[in-house]
Every structure is written in C-alpha cells, then in structure tokens.
Image 1 (cartoon, rainbow over the protein chains, first blue to last red):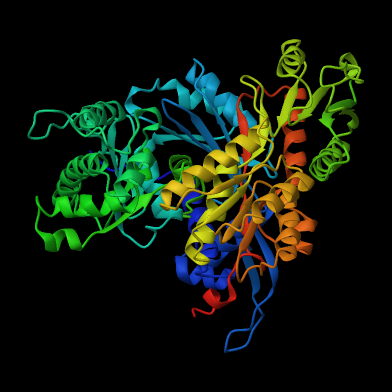
Image 2 (tube, rainbow over the protein chains, first blue to last red):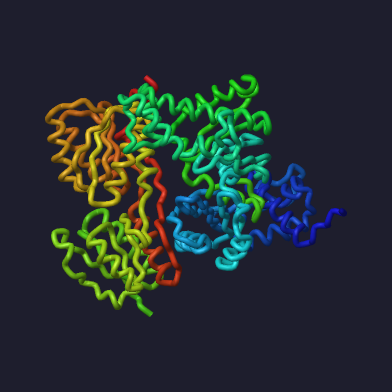
Length: 363
Length: 272
C-alpha cells in the first residue's frame, strides 16, 4: 500500500505544534531561532507565529539582543499556559473523577461523582461541574476508561458534539503511565510501565512519551496455583485470605471491621504475623508481574498504582525482592520502581494525552 | 430574569462564613446577581427561612445551617442549589480537599519536622469537614506508624479549643505537635501553649487546616484552603446550574502547604 501524503491542513497543524513545543520547552524564544531549530522557512514561521499570537497561546514579551553580526533585535516569544484549559476525566467502577488544568497540567479544580447509570450522562454531569469553573476557553477533553475496547464508539463523538471541543479517549492504565511520563516522577525515563491494581490488574506502557496500545488487562494470566492474577490480587480475595489467616492466628491486631490496605500495612509494620503473611503473598504475585514485564518489555521504570499503593514502600521493596526470584537480579536492579499514589493519575494522563494530540505538547 | 441569589448560613459574621460570602458576592456581582443572606440562629435550625425562595435564581447553603431534608425539598422543587463544605447525595457542592490538606500537614510534621506524638483538635463533628479531617488524620497516623494521638474537642470554635487545650496541658502529657482542624483554632492554641511555657516550634510544632490573614499574622503553618476562593467557586457552580448546566457530584479545591514559623524546629532545620 502506498503511504498517503499529508494534507496541507495536517502539515500546517504539525508545523504549528512544532513551533509551540519549541517555545514551551525553551528551545527557542524568537522567530529566527524557531526557524533554525525547526528547519521551517522564515515566512512560514512568521505566518504561524502570527496565528498563535492571535489565539493568545503565545505573547511577545519585549526585545532580545541583536545577533553578533548586528541587525534588528528579535521580538521575544513566551508560551501562555493559562490561555486555554483542559478537562481530564477518569472513569472507574466506583467513581468518575475529573480535573481542570491549564496547558502545563496545573490543576485548578477537581470534580467527582458516583456512577449513576448512563456513562454518557455521568460524564456530561462531571464535565459540567468543571465547565462551571473555567477561567479560560476549553481547549479539549480527555477521558480515561477501564478497558477502552468495550466502549460504544459513539461516546467520543457524542461528548465532542455536546461540548463542541475535541475529545480523546484512552485506557486508564495507559493514561496513568502517560501522566507519570508527562508530569510525574518518571519524566526522565524513556520507557515506563504502570501496573494498576484495583478491581483487575492492568498494565500500561509508555515508550518515548506515547502510550503503546497493546497493553491492558493481564488479570486473566494464571500463576502456578492455577488462579488468575485478578483473583489473587482482588480485594475480595485478600479479604477472604485475611479471614482464613485470622482464624489461624486469633491474636492478630488486624480486624475485619476496618480491614484495608492501610490497616494491613500498619499491622505489618508492627510485626503482626497475619499482616506480614498477607503482605508477603501479595508481594509474591507482584514480583511475578514485575519479572514478566522486565523480561518482555525491558522498561526503565515500573510504577505501581491503584488502591494497593496504600500498602506503601514495604510492599514495593518486598515485591522487587520477589521479582529477583524469577529473573536475574542484575536485570531487576537496572529498573527504577515507584509508587504512584495520586487519585487523579488517570485523569492527569487524559489531560496529557489530549494536550499532546491537540497542541503537540508533552507536559 | 431572576437577579437574586440566596445564601443560607449560620453566623454570617463568623470569619469562615464572612470570607465565603465575600467571595460569592464578588463573583455574583460580575454576573449581575445580587446576593441575599439568611443568617440562621444555630439554636433554632428549624425556623423558617427569611428568603423568598420563589423569587431566587438559586440557593447557596454554607455548611449545615438547616436540616438536610429542607435543602433537599428546595432542590427537588427544581431550584438550583449548591452546598459549601457540606454533602447531601444528589446535590452538587464545593469543598476543600480535606484528604490532601491533612495528609500534607502530617507529612510535613513527620518528614521535615521529625514530630511523632500528636495532639489533634477536632472541628465540629456534625459537619462533613470536621468528620473527614479527623478520619484522614487517623489514616495518616497509620501510614507513618505513629503512636495514638490525643484528640481534643474544638468544634471549629477557638474558645472551645482553648478550654480543651488548657485542660489537656494541666495534666502535662508528652507531645510534640498540635494539628488543628482549622487555622483559627490553631492560632488560639499558640496563645495557650505560650501561657503554659511551651516554646513553638522548638518544643512543639503547631499547624492548622485552611488559611487566611489571621494565619499569616500569627506566622502559622497551614494548608491554604482559600476560603474566599471556596465562596467564588461555589457561586460559579450555582450560576452554572442557573444557566442550565446539569451538575452532579462535588467540586474539590486543591490545597497547598504553606510553611511558616510555627512548625519547623530551628535545630532540625539546620540539620543539627
């Protein structure tokens, strides 16, 4: 099949993004420098910069120094992060969480609601909550969902029609990884995998800033005991396992009345045998996952996300040790690990992805 | 077109309420709305409102000055309603991020000030903010594996906080940090601690939730849940509804840690 040529509109959009990104990242701050770093002709640069100035995405802030050979002093350009706002929403089985940010991903308000029937209607009501708080025109909307392939294809179109802005939909776990790449602790890594453990077990892979769309649900993978990961790491399984262990060790400080990842972590820190057993079993499963990921994808960074992060760094450290049982220690040690604890992670990733699509910005 | 918005509150002259109302009035004026305030007697929350609800475009309710079922009846009549620092299922509202705020305060005290033995001055436990801030504080104690804290009655009233702290200090228990559910109670605690001979922050760190000029004047470490901003954001939510936006759920405002002089132990700060 012959590759299709880009239309003039696509080319113009690409060049606009190139220029905007160069100014935002500090690569160039005037028209001549932009022409140099992007390779675009000076008239093209002037034309597109004029457009970006008219739209308020850039401003002129004064004059810089003349070039060594003399000549006119260049007019300096600056990116305006507050010129537009972006809404990012993540949908989970328990809540719909939205954030309102500027073009640098800085959050000014959050809005959350419980799912209440129609996904489209729920999304509209949450986005409306943030539309009421807009301080600048809305540029676009990003939405993160669990298991994107199950969505009705019309959702994106209907939302875009309703709000009259572009809408971009992605998988929550991939977006969680995008968020960390764009705005988070892993921004230095070239490749990053996020393991999200909530109701299921999902993996999101980001390579060079873009979500790699072949990740997703690994919850059905089975371990040696024949049980799938999503069962072994589900809260209901952990609760059941805690019930069994509490029968065996009745003097445990754990209580089923307030059992949570946090109470297990707390009891484990205080040497509770039951909590330590639970922590060890969860770490063993996570260690398996980490080893598989390192063997298959060779990422620079792995982050663990979801409610399970309430079990803290002790769980992560133990899971890394467990991974070494399945894969050479040296290979495990080459990977950086972190906990991604923010509840707005996927919504932030939805913002990052939308910004990348719409303006070519990488956070 | 209706040009009036109603605000129902208790004690409109309280610092918190005054600031919320000021923020709400500033934004309402920009949209051409005039604000009418019904300031309730806390001892008689069932008395009828002085507002002509029929004539209003919408109603803002600050905390819990009237029974929830009364607010629900206004909402069910089709009148736009927004709640400030309160939550009723099905009615939109605006709150400060209590979880983020308390977590930031405790993290600062533990990781940067080296504190471990905490006193927590509760807010009004009939209000969402009071319950949530205490709940999150307990969770953070667990996260950092800290010993049990002392919990004092405060009710979001500086006078009550002073009495509770005086009674507590009379027994001279060991502690090295005071976290108050609001900054006005934390400011009041500073006076009591000085009276009992505690040096702040050398002996005890003191922090509070929320921020205002009173906190800055007292050099108090806080999380800046800007109350005027809370008023502005909540009236924008209400006006959005009046203009036809269908909103469900709660808007949560971010909070930033503001480190001033009452938390950092100078010797620790120097790395001694």
